[in-house]
Image (cartoon, rainbow, N blue to C red; front, top):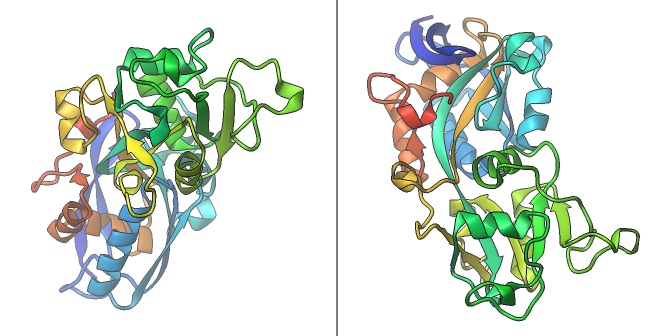
Amino acid sequence: MSAAVAVVVFAGGVGVGRLVGGTGPERPMCFRGTLHLVGSTAFERTADVLRSGYESLCPDARVEVAAIGSNEGVRALTAANAASTIAMHDGHLKPDSDEIRVRAFRGFPVALVAFAVVVHKDAGVTGLSVRELRSIYARGGPTEWKRLKGGGDVPIRLVGRTEGSGTRTVFEEHILDEPEPELSSRDCRRKDEIRAAARIIRCERSSQAQILDAVNTIPGAIGYAELHVAANARRYPNIRVLSLDGRRPDVSSAGNGYPFVAPEIFYTYGLPPNGSPAAAFLTFLADASARRLLERAGATTCLTADAQVTTPCQPT
């Protein structure tokens, strides 16, 4: 069994952990058995690309992807499954969180993820400033699209993610700089009778697919999701991806000021045991073959060729 070195992000910065993987000196990154990748729905598509590529390289390995939400994924990590489970999380956990401070989770930056703000086409707008977007979600802001330049004569309907979503956390912290408004609707079309006094129509959905389905079918709806999924015009013909402050969403524009970008972090419960599925898979993520798979999926890897974490993927 051969050893491999991979970069691991600790609570206070970047460190190097020694990870030992599996089946022989020619393939130190392979394991036999099953690995569970749980968490982010935004990263599900890219995780499936990594899964398929890894299983092709390591035929005795099975990788199961369960997109249950970033925070639910983190909650699924325990000392008992530390060898076989990795949580996918949108953005870094706070250094003072219980997961980092008490439970000693370790984070491995994988790729930058670009998110998109999306609207139903009849909203009439093609882009918003971050200031306008904040006003829509703020107390006292507009409740109809026609109050915005180019907006249609339809009510604004906010479609947000439920608590526990990493994408929602990124949206609140990077864009709104405050929590989303209170829940006021179950069907996303009208306020519930018991919440008739709420300022605006706002519903919640538990996955990005559900958000996109709602925005695609409900006039005036606005929501957010991972860019590549949101931009699937064949599946979502009524959705328009918005520019923010005049910048179109993509990972490469993060350095030019597009604000809705965050790193995808893979968390483990402590440093995975040598020879475990989790250790072998993290070793694979530091390899050139994983970088090629990420690029093929349209993602920007967080690791350079010499296994250094790029600046946009570092904790802030």
